[in-house]
Length: 150
View 1: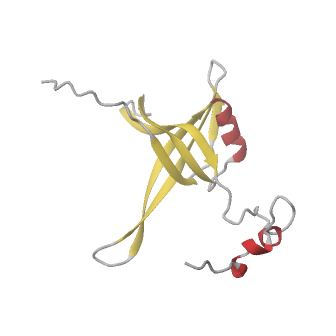
View 2 (view 1 turned 120 degrees about the horizontal axis):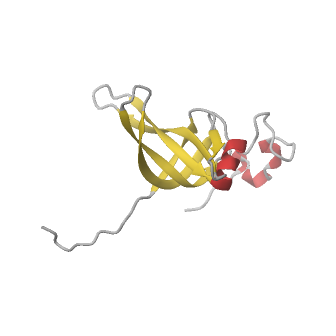
View 3 (view 1 turned 180 degrees about the vertical axis):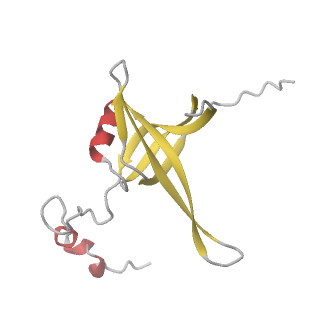
């Protein structure tokens, strides 16, 4: 029996994680770029029995299309931190043994490349050639913060 309640169609996902492997990309027969990768998403939780902190990790496959797919292939590599905004989608395929499988993945609408916290590159330098501490104004350096009178 239908009650007549109309539910809004909502399928929206926000994930933050690191790539588990280098991105793979190709072009469809129509010339559209497709890039796929997986990210590991961590959740810290306290084990009630042992009282120890543990990481609960899950892995989510991501699919990116068109120009953004090309940028992901160029800029990302295994371990890169990203913020992904998109929608869940499922698809079916046959594995090597002929068994039908279903996979759930995120079709990304936006992938934001996250920079290291210090803003420095792998060599310890920012884009300007200075280390993060040298590049930051004196008021922004951690040991020189003023106390806020609250």
